[in-house]
Image 1 (cartoon, rainbow, N blue to C red):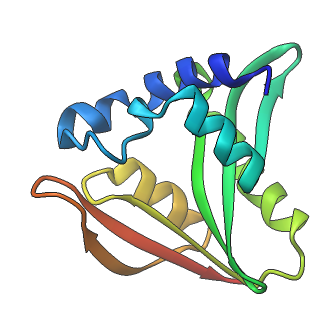
Image 2: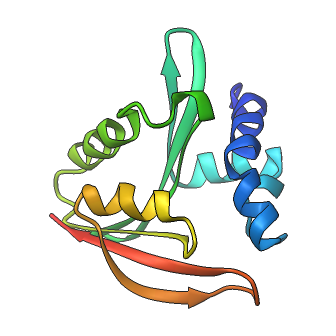
Length: 144
């Protein structure tokens, strides 16, 4: 809980481009409050990512039922992206839940970088959801 303010700074930085593009005021991580983040940390699986003594990102995972998990959020500070850390983190987090064979996540439809990232890790586009007039999400899934 002591990390919430630092996490919010990184989260706002990472998701700012999507927020500017889609203007989704209600569900964007940019507008998440410290109170809401604390609530989510208590309710779901949360991992703060450290490099030495510095917080560089986080992963939030939500259970859908006993055999399915949703990757709700994965973010790394911009200077830590494109270095292979995200791929290592996904593999590590999947190995932390060996009984889970069904993973899913949502990512914005125009975010080609995210599509490529998840697809190279074995995720397959399985659906689309219209959130607002400007924001459509692609749903990805992976069976282990």
